Amino acid sequence: MARALERPPATDLEPEELWEENHQGETPDIATRQALNLAHRVSEKFPELASRYKNFAGPAAVASGALMVLAGVAIARRARRGQHPDEILQQITSQEIEQAATVTSRKNQIWRMFQRIAKARRSRDEAAASQ
Image 1 (tube, helix red, strand yellow):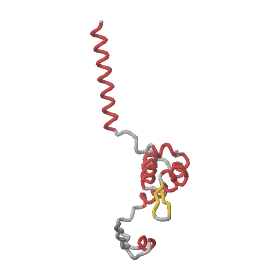
Image 2 (cartoon, helix red, strand yellow):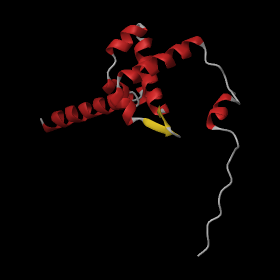
Image 3 (cartoon, helix red, strand yellow):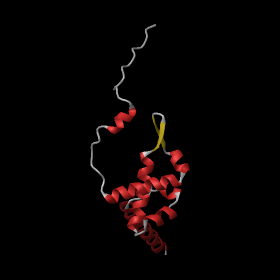
Image 4 (cartoon, one colour):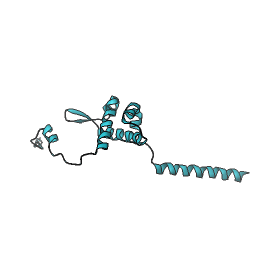
């Protein structure tokens, strides 16, 4: 029976050294930084969500990016309505965070409105034809 070849290590650096080097990319602006900070605070408020959306990076467990995105969307909706960050943190619910990605688009809402109008016209025409 042949023995599998051993893989050489991908890098000689320790995991901590990988995080410290090669910082590339854009630095977020102040508003984005505040929204991300609030998203992290919201995820800490709901440990059951954090445990459900958990990723493991080596020996450490970190909050999933999906949870941060969902929390960010829920926070952005409330912020666009003019709510203060402390008010958002107090009032937001875990259900609102999980449903942040399932809200229908405006296009779908308009299409359903047209369908209701067409259905009402058909029923009205059928009622008029039966008389």
